[in-house]
Length: 206
Ligand SMILES: C[S@@+](CC[C@H](N)C(=O)[O-])C[C@H]1O[C@@H](n2cnc3c(N)ncnc32)[C@H](O)[C@@H]1O
Image 1 (tube, rainbow, N blue to C red):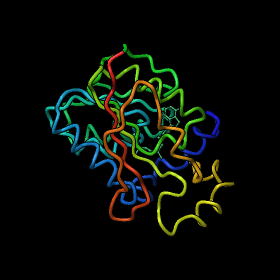
Image 2: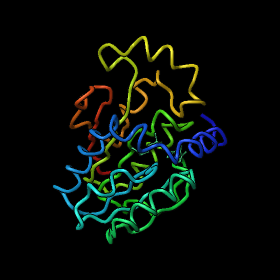
Image 3: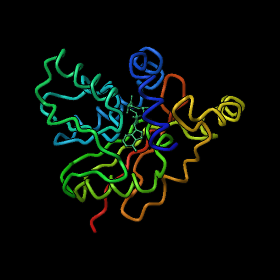
């Protein structure tokens, strides 16, 4: 999807996003937060959206988020304020392909349900690797084509509707595997629907 289409689509989704997608995408966010909480440190959420994962992080974890959509970010800010979260270090409007933050500044970098949305996922992955310290973790939760039993026909039918839906339903997993700076340590389908895949990588030393 192109930037204008993303901004238009998520302006529309922002008021109803939590209701429409909160539950179906919850499993990946929980797995990511569990891992981050167990390790501690600072996490960057790329494409944080309405901040649905914010309340899952331990108060000891420092959370930074970026997103392209000001409407989605405003919802995340509202959530942080309403819940009185003091561990949110910053929420910034930035493009995930060129994130204006210093390299190796996070222990964990997470991208949940965004890789099949962005125009150049390989560039986003490069940025995630750059921002993660060596030995830290890169976490991805996403729907990938052909991974979920019984959903292939729906994936094919939804594929031409990417600009309307806000993501590519036929996005192949290969596009986020095989990065030279990452070692895949965990891959699993996320319960309860099995629609999403959770990937956990270790950031290799340069
Ligand atoms: C499907 S939502 C996922 C939101 C959140 N991560 C979650 O799990 O609920 C995709 C998000 O990615 C954001 N996004 C899309 N392209 C982006 C880009 N190039 N840079 C930053 N954010 C982007 C959208 O604005 C939207 O908030």
